Length: 482
Image (cartoon, rainbow, N blue to C red; front, side, top):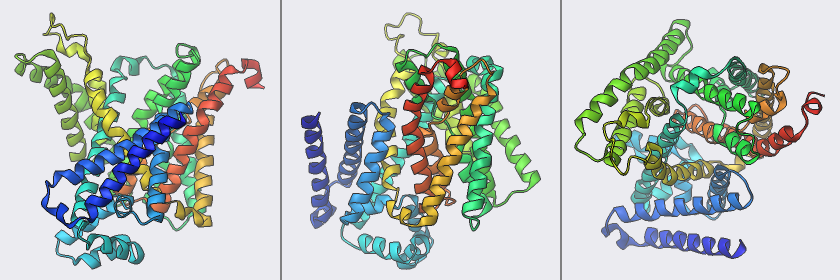
């Protein structure tokens, strides 16, 4: 393992040095403008590969390795003054600054307004250099790739969740899911109000909504490793996690719309909830009609082309429509995955490639783009924010709320069920919690300190849940109850 890791680090260092050479070379301006984008995105992806490699060797979820690699890159790069990392570290704020400049605001003033005096001066100094425009170009490309990755990730989660499965979810799973969303929300809201009363109501609501997330993928992997995937406990956990995703996305849509609209009013709140429900039901009703019509138009294509083109267009259209009505694009992506399945392509009955599933065609896109998102989220975690005692206390408070809120959800199951294992199975936030945090930062409702605190909560709940779940599943039931 050590030799392989050394080789990976050597290649990564070569990529990083290559970027510095390109960035510092004035003649690079006259080369193909796509070249810096290729190098920058490839470097991010390669560091993601190193993180994934280390995580797999340590029997940890890949997302943790990619996220922690991003945290290390962001903070080490910032310490040594790596300009590209410093740009990426500011995230969407950089693009808000550029947008402000395009409206006529002077660059120096826009940097101060968006980033503050200290960060603004540092970014202004970088952008004024010869490689400034290229760095903005690469940062924008990385941001776009990461956003595509999130859309494909939620699409694949939806593909694993059929409407039939949602209908079959029993009373236990429903109760666990509802408690698992409501309790972390209430506890998170209370913690934010208690520990940082100066925060706005919108910020408190978003922080609370972020705590309600559950990563079904991480829990499913642990259950599979323990050969418990078909057990009653596993059925309750996975069924609850499916409903948890749906409820969490609806809550995210409601809270995001409240933030965008600028306030909490009963009529406005009811309108947002009705709009979210109307979008989901409209997607489920008209989506199949649109799919069948689209497939009829391309019957001359082979089945691989048909599945790839229709799937890509369908998820993008629903993601765009969700954004159009004021919801998060990932709500549309998730709905697209739930609606779409291979049975729609029954026209191609004798094709030799019929065994290739939609998931098989989309998974390579997700495998390339999603790690970029996780590394980018890690880069934006500013560890120096934890030097503030208030932020550290808030992070610990949110972590406590996140753990307790999910463990309590296990009491939604019957006494005969392994309630502790069910609650622990709902604990890991993983990729879903990161997506929620990223949306909050892009909306401007989460500052650097809050974003870092939430990412810390995601890392710890994802890290401690698998061993605790293994312990709870291994314990005899009477010992768990005691």
